[in-house]
Image (cartoon, rainbow, N blue to C red; front, side, top):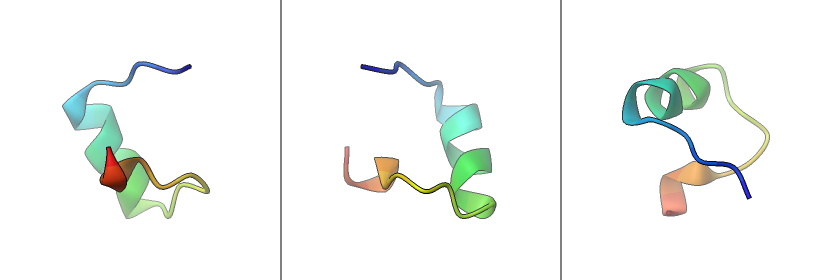
Length: 24
């Protein structure tokens, strides 16, 4: 499982990251 920081998480959402970390 991947641990991701809030800043990176927001950046990934902006580029339409293929996995929906927004539900975590």
